[in-house]
Length: 297
Image 1 (cartoon, one colour):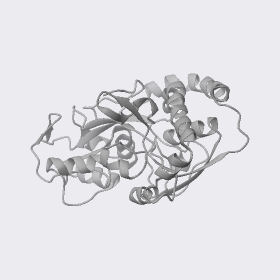
Image 2 (tube, helix red, strand yellow):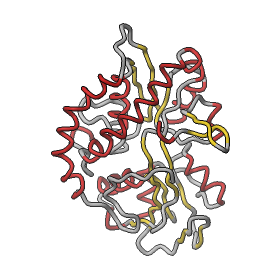
Image 3 (cartoon, one colour):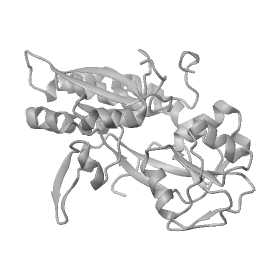
Image 4 (cartoon, one colour):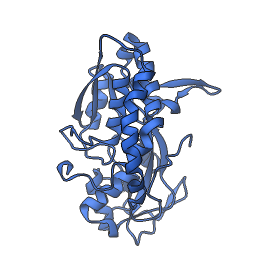
């Protein structure tokens, strides 16, 4: 992959991660939080009028990336949202946020009812939704990893006694099939491989089905899966396969109409988002412990 996060505390092939890394970063993050606003101010020209940007994001509690469901917490609203908020502040953008089911967010972006959605993995088919940050390469236009939000590693969660195997290309030992969140790239990839289960499962139901040996495996981003298992008290009943299902960059696509109307604002926003990620992403993520605050549960 083009990028691998250096702040991951988990290892594939284990049941859950510890928080030793996060504890070590907390003191450093407090300093980074103080210095970041000054750095952002220095990076962006002063502008009189703010640009309004409506963003839709999924109504799921995917700690540490997104917190809450219908609400938007004022404290630790999610690692991804904090990065986006910092980038918006630096580019003089006023965010208007709301939460919907993921497929509804996609529909709103496609019909230019919002200016953007997050988080999204790039595929050529998704260019119909909106515009991704792109760059010229020897292979033509490709998504620009420097302007991604983050990089997610999607693990395969299985029962401890599972005979399921994954070599990075094909599965063996399937009985019931595997699943992933509906509408996700992982879900489509499982279908293309011919191993998608007949029923649809959200993260909690899918991991429960794995724990009780009713589903061969569930694919979801590693930290989200670990936190969900901890919340369900099922950590000891599920493990991950040693080879991840996929590792891929996350983006914030903007609507075709917005990019056409304000191309310079869109370009500047994506650029600053990448700089915010590089400057404070690791420390910010480390400040989100495995267990969310009680007010977020």
